[in-house]
Length: 257
Image 1 (cartoon, helix red, strand yellow):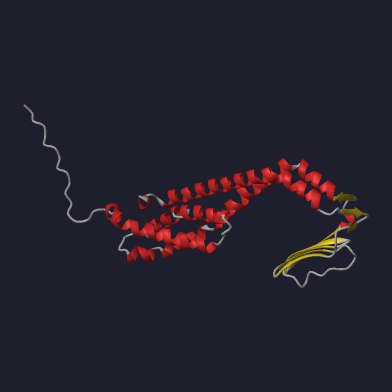
Image 2 (tube, rainbow, N blue to C red):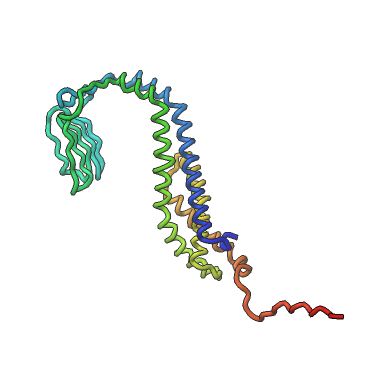
């Protein structure tokens, strides 16, 4: 029955399904975080070493061990308020925090510096930070929910549309092999509807600590080919009959007495 529905309807289904899925994942994440928020803060309060971050007269300092470095092949995050100059040139992108300024390098062609001279004086301790997290629990969780469920995940699904359209083009091969008369618009519909099963399976796999895009696309491709094969017998019913044309004869004229 899928091939008899319009491609626009299949696309609308895809948008509705992915939106509801994103909201459901966001709600589940919101619930899990809300349950573990206070216990996690209390554990951090017991095990986190005391520290302070101070801004005074445009000079940043901290009691945390320095330099703190987090580095990957294409990104680096470094905090060093000892007064030593940091250089962002060796990194593809980086965020560098120094005593007098912050350096943000987005790419080889864009690097910006933000000096602390205009920043107001303040001091944040570990207790201040943990108390702030407890006090603003609701605001933080709702911000995370709206960002993940209503922005990041739907945007990610939109980026999947070009691969889905490409998969629909590939499905034309098994459509010919199985002897169907499917057109590209119909394989697009199949591709949009077929996203449901691999998404649910991938969710279960992620919940069990097994996360791989290879599983998703493998299941997706197999399920879409199965859907194409199931259209072989149905396609004949969906085609416009050809051959002899036998119009219904007109009713006989009324007898006039």
